[in-house]
Image (cartoon, rainbow, N blue to C red; front, side, top):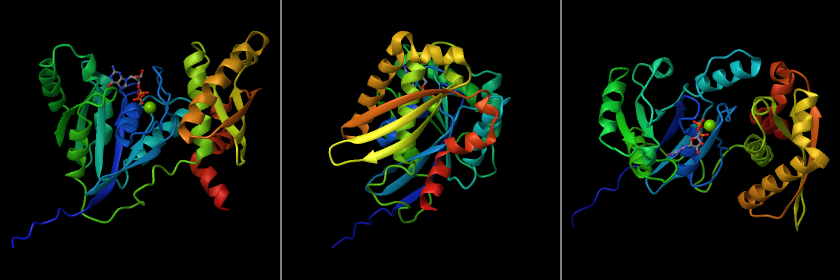
Length: 308
Ligand SMILES: Nc1nc2c(ncn2[C@@H]2O[C@H](COP(=O)(O)OP(=O)(O)O)[C@@H](O)[C@H]2O)c(=O)[nH]1
Ligand SMILES: [Mg+2]
């Protein structure tokens, strides 16, 4: 009887890199099938690297979503770029995401330079193909990117509709080393629940509030009480100025109520539990330049503190 060779299991890490708003977080969510990373139309929505695991029959990919490549001026921006660089260490494949509706510019060339490492396969993902009416335009775009780097593959996708996501997974898996799974097959992420909840609150603030507020907002979950019937969460929204606090609280508390309602719905959906959410707003001037506070916001330290 002829023996059919079973493909060997492959497992490894793929980091998702690109300019702000390319659709990196949307792509992570599309691949793992859960809304792990928050998404908005605003740049610098993602502030920290976070992982999401996809496990198939013959492979496991540990994805790392990262902040957009940008110039760093404040302490938080420097940390964001450190997270981007750190995600390139000990990684098997780089998934370089670009907005396929845009021509590559100087910023793209600089971002590509960041991922040029000897022997590192870099897959170019041309995202947002749902928004490209004339598909042949993609060929011209690919030609331009070819002048920037010898990419391992070119994969058009729509993170929004899911188009091309299977091809992308295949292209990544083909470049992973053979080996056993790194995580149990039902493991989704290392990110603690309280961080995910804080991010969901921050997303609603970014979506509902105006211009100057987004960059000034940080959210920390202070209490997480898991009761049989409900999870009770208390969180603090930090802003930099009193005026921003007024915007977020709104007239008669209308805005914070709206934020709370939207965030609670999102958190309930994700955890599939009834949630009781309490929000507080505090002014913390210049928090973006305070290393201590930035440590408090870092989910990796939340995990370590809990273990300690
Ligand atoms: N039309 C379209 N929009 C997308 C797609 N992927 C992401 N976006 C939008 O692009 C914006 C930035 O997405 P996000 O995932 O936060 O980008 P990131 O900054 O690279 O993480 C959001 O408004 C998304 O809804 C896509 O495939 N098609
Ligand atoms: Mg993002």
